Length: 308
Image (tube, rainbow, N blue to C red; front, side):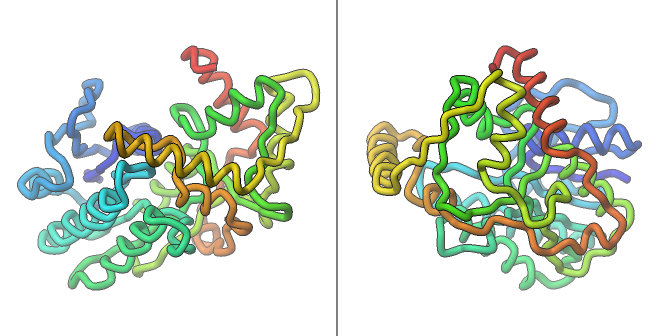
């Protein structure tokens, strides 16, 4: 098939591109500023989600759309809605008018708790707006925390863990699911090749039912970095919010994106980020990368690229 893909220069998008090409598919790729390595299976379309003519060119002669582009951090809450919600609507309406057979939105498990942050709410609203578009044949993926080569969010924790520090920001008893980016890509491939859209949001995880505590994750990952047990540090709630507010203020003054925001702290402190829906597995897809081996591969990549 020929697939229209947004967000292909991002962390998860890069894994999806590799998976699609490795399995014989070709890609129309929306690119704004990032340089893309030439590949005969990739047709680059210059533009962004606010450029209607670029979006029309992107989906021309394609069989499906996989929409990965979006913001996980932003300078303002408005930017989350402008890109995550508005950008999704713009692309979806053009896809519907062109009668594209399949439209997949890469959403987030955060959409399950929209009250926590503008990011979470913008992702839910992106899903909701798809239901209002006539003739759109869509589904959405709600992955939890995603890691793998190229990810910068877990890299911060791994650098701390390498120094023997294991921060605990979530409350006691909190659990989360996790998934390697290659498993997200294999799920997208499975959806593309076998599933007829039914306006469903699928939750994805690595197959660990009941999820992990942060201590569980550190227990598996720490031996890959250090030869002793890490020092667990439970970060005071008030301190976390103070840091987030200060970071947000200075970022606003400097017109930059904050390192951490109150909304992100709300997400970190939520007790249940466990995937409960496993209907994609019931359709025949199975994750293949366990946590320990996935992080071993990821850490190897970080070291090779001098990130660790």
